[in-house]
Length: 151
Image (tube, rainbow, N blue to C red; front, side, top):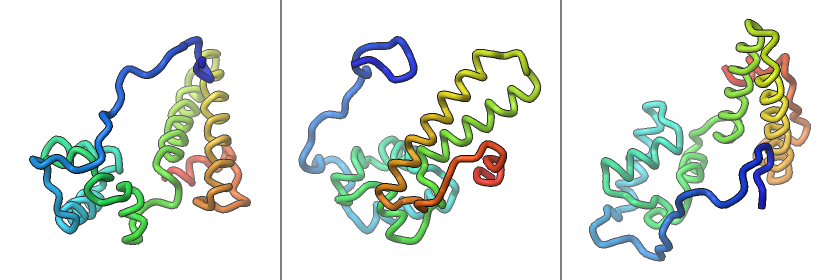
């Protein structure tokens, strides 16, 4: 199947190996892993960065195998996390960078088109998160209020 906003066809380059249990060399103490997650989140790391740090520095190859839930679920269970999901917030930051760029480079038609595509992805994500109840059902993407949502 082809990519949505590009000419690329085919699968991504890497896949996680199938594993149903924690390897014996890995750290498998739930309480310790949860404390690390909360500590790293307090330092301001994103969930993706927390997973990378746990993998590279603390011998936790897969948090879901150890905890039985995702890092974001662990954070939300402990009432930590942002108002918006991380992937949607990243897309909104990207759109904000493009808006700032287009403010100084008005004739950049390629980035104008990329901004339209990024905003389309944000609206699609918003519909999904509204249907799952992670954001308010009356939330709407507004370009002029984007800076207030991100900062």
